[in-house]
Image 1 (cartoon, helix red, strand yellow):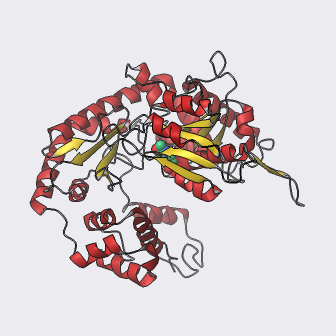
Image 2: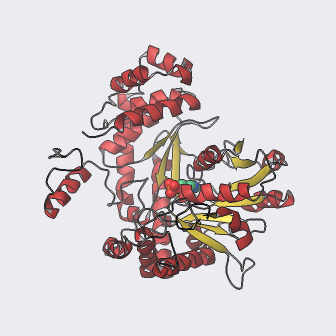
Amino acid sequence: MTDTAGGGALPAQGMPAADVLDEIRALRAADRPTHGGRLFAYVYDPGVAGLDELAQAAYAESAHVNGLDPTAFPSLLAMENALVAAAARLLGGGPGTDAPDVVGSVTGGGTESLLLAVKAARDARPDLAEPRIVVPASAHAAFAKAAHYLRVALDTVPVDPVTLRPDVAVVAAAIRPETVLVVASAPSYAHGVVDPVAEIAAVAAAAGVRCHVDACFGGWALPWLRRLGAPVPPFDFVVPGVTSISVDLHKYAYAPKGVSVLLHRDAALRAPQYFAYADWPGYTMVNPVIASTRSGGPIAAAYATLRHLGEDGYLRLAAATRDAVAGLADAVRAADGLRLMAEPESTVVCFTADDPTLDLFVLVDELTARGWHTQPQLRYADLPASVHLTVTAAVAPRVAEFGPALTDAVAAARAAGPVVLPPELLAMAGGLTPEALTPELIGGLAAGLGLGTGPTPDRMAAVNTLLDAAPARLRERLLAGFVGLLQRPAW
Ligand SMILES: *Cc1c(COP(=O)(O)O)cnc(C)c1O
């Protein structure tokens, strides 16, 4: 920011529009590339010419429309109902199916969809003083967040270190009289593995408990992959006992950020999701989702994206993604010392290292240095650290370049050798209790790791190694501390 006379984002005198945009563009230059097919996390890029412009125009059209009141802005209600119908159709619901009464809500993202699925399940059982949910260890962290926010107990079922799926008998055994929801993923984000949804839904139904399928990630990919011939197991409303499903349109529907759909098998299941309040002097409030005022922008952009791409477009993009996944997996198989965590069955390629001289976190940095942005995953329970690639259609034209880059990066990582942290730092990470972490200690650690207040360092291997050595509770405290240091007012 150049002129901060008025304080941070507010200059004493307003600036010309072109200068403001220049500023934003200059800031954006430090970001990871959102287009170009070499970013394997955070951004879902179909690589379709003209789609960004369409979504932006649609967004602008509805940016100031408020989803607070669907009677005031029927355009938004119509687009939401159309998005819900499309998602329901794709996921085994709607007229003529075994789930003809499906209803849903458009939310701001996957986390919000999951929070609301947990809220609906909790509030359907007001008789329970201490409600609980059963969640495979591979389920998205947003369920832990929901449990935390909503004061619901979290019963985590381990996943098998080879199949990366939970044992259904263990899921069944974890269901208690206080359980309000059982979860399955289609697929899991970390490894891209589809849980045994039919079996999990069956044990939930037998216990009279709701079953949510988290298809935030795969709900808009697996149906197309199946139509293309992939052996995708049943995971949607076709499966008896599945009571709700979430699907993020800002992932494989390729809509701009801020839009997800939460579906329920019928309106009675959805009813406890709503919050209505009439006991104050203002307008009577009824919110289906967490936000009250919400922009029509993301909804209109998602609507435009679906209308423009159509079924034929999504099939084409799914085919490109499938081929890219196969090519990337081949590159991993061919790389010396790497091993796939699982045979790809969706849109994820996830690998680990078999060889102690090859440090995965160093490899991630070497790939970054070569322009390939992957996502490191820390070790968890009996699972080793791994590298995650979310593959989107835009990757397809770059796949041939990935193999050589990976070979090169592996050689460089081997030559550099594993990260060696000072022994006192490692001992601290292993032995420190979260309670002992003072702001001074976090500040000192951050400075030592190059995580000051300036730009984040290019090389993150030391940070990842430190986090990897720490137990989960300590990791959480360190992460919150480090990010809290970055998030300071720009005076
Ligand atoms: C991305 C994701 C979420 C969370 O979605 P956000 O949009 O990031 O809030 C939940 N579950 C799965 C499986 C996901 O991939």
